[in-house]
Length: 368
Image (tube, rainbow, N blue to C red; front, top):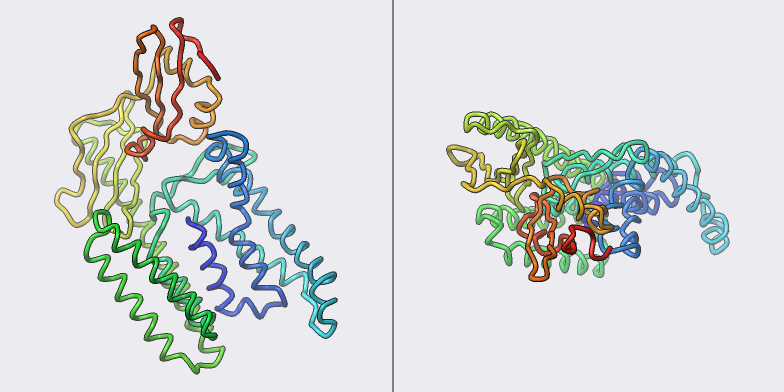
């Protein structure tokens, strides 16, 4: 998921009462929900190093078990040598609760990341397999509404805070409205109804005690949980139906992907991997039939040219991440060949951003 959603999880958990667990609990929550994304700095090691390294070591089982210890230890050091030196009367942070809230925060990060088609390597560093939820679009406005709304009720007491929230939701609304080609009209209406509901709730609870605000935040978290569970169940049911529809059309599916549409919980883009080809299409619960496949298929990559190009560094890194790899092969006037890699999940985009490997006339790498 995007950093906004992760941060809203931390804020919502704090607003729901975890901030009272110990001094620096909110800091532990906000650090924990974002800590695994430290792997974004892998971009310094090559053009395709980020996607080869992302959602692996820092998101896997070993990291999940270590992050809370690292975060709690760092905050305890900060508490001892900075915070309480500035304010000797301040209560000291407690190690046990700090470790517990950090653990809760850290676990939410890979759980959310697993939900989309980008995937996650839960078992790293012991096993590099990718796992995919195919349930929620990577930038999900409904999670922004539910989790951000839960946090807003508590963290909008000052005028400056209210201005910040207003700016965020204004920019988010602009993003929704500017993408009406992707976002259906009903979703646009639902978005603004949701914002109106948050504004009304904020006004209604403007003088509410902390306990009431915490209960409201818990309601927001519960609704977000129900939404995620519903989307996961819908995705599983859709993929089962896609497999059955593929078989009815003579396609033996080895794997199926359903990429959720932005702000549309009912539809998504489909990739079906058969033995020799990929089939793409659209699945929509609101149409009949639900699955509409495109007439043309895309051949799965095979042969000596693909195998030679796959040895290039950028290609190796790209294939570490790629779920449904495909290539375009272009002969060159000098007898060489260009091999362009893309992934069928993002076929429209990755034809541009995937690596292009040049082979010489003998079929070897012209450069690496």
